[in-house]
Image (cartoon, rainbow, N blue to C red; front, side, top):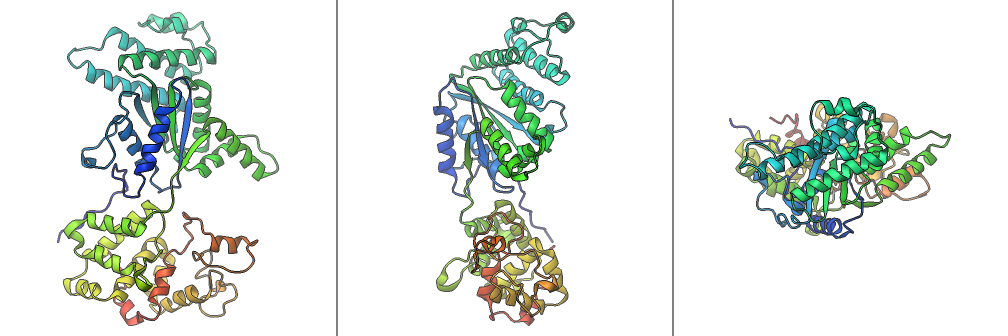
Length: 469
């Protein structure tokens, strides 16, 4: 029996979350600011929100680099600003063990331009003397930053040869001289490629770095790469980066004050931040992922579309608002559906209660393993879940039935869009105004309410044990 193909958690140039206009707006901002200004832009999104895809789409739109053959045909205009920018991609977390992360960034810039130069000079066997000299300058600076020796002078940018480093070891350069050297090298590279405005450097996954690496890379940007005609686009979970900065700054006796100082530090480096919207049609997104599986998920997208409809055919808002988590849920649904026989698939297609049960059990299997295991062992645990959702309003501290907090079944979980009472209490505020990326939010609650008494335990037991292939 053939197996289905899992949906990989990889970036894509296809916009499935309605962000095309945002990509185009950011591109216009980048190319529209003063060519002589140094700019650092931030793209904020929580983990799994699609920052990398969004930044890749932005790069594709700017000058076409980062294009993948499998991502042809998307709606973004290709190379819209190619005559104005040249882009470089840097995955920060891959270099978090480098002693000086900014040195690794300089090497990434050098490698990008080296590849372009080789393509441009493909008719010759070797690069031109000027091109080699500029690349050597990048290598020198990166090496010397790593060694913290700094022995290059700007007037020697064209010098090559083994004796050069020995000859210059006596000279110590200031930070300003290093910046001048980098700026001169970038200027030569831009002339070489006939760029009229700026180099745009994408720094992805800063939030995946250790606190020390993230802090040192930001320090390097501030000290060495604060130069004209150079723009940075930094992808990050802002809360994680602020936390990393706070851990490296001198601590006070007030943690909240430390965090405020860390936010101010980040603002000084990156004062222009776009935030990825957290609201999107995730119901349609899930169905599109299932459709992507084609015949392997025969009729499954329609089944899930039915399950996600509530009263008066209004869509239920019961999915975690996070693209990565939606992909994970889609994989579980595909695995399970693939293992069903045709008769069972047909039964689910014709019964909305069974369709909802499929989605409900898959959700528990993926996101709440402790609840799923209890349900698998005792299917009547479904009554406790349903009672908690229906009666607790997200606060089951006063309950006396099986869903009580003292049982531990639901401790630490919150229900979305519920809550009455004193909003000065953190728990009440969290329930009424949930964090869209909270892993302890029981997002499937509206579907459980819609199921109510339409699903018997006997029907639910047919889905258990839930063992996707």
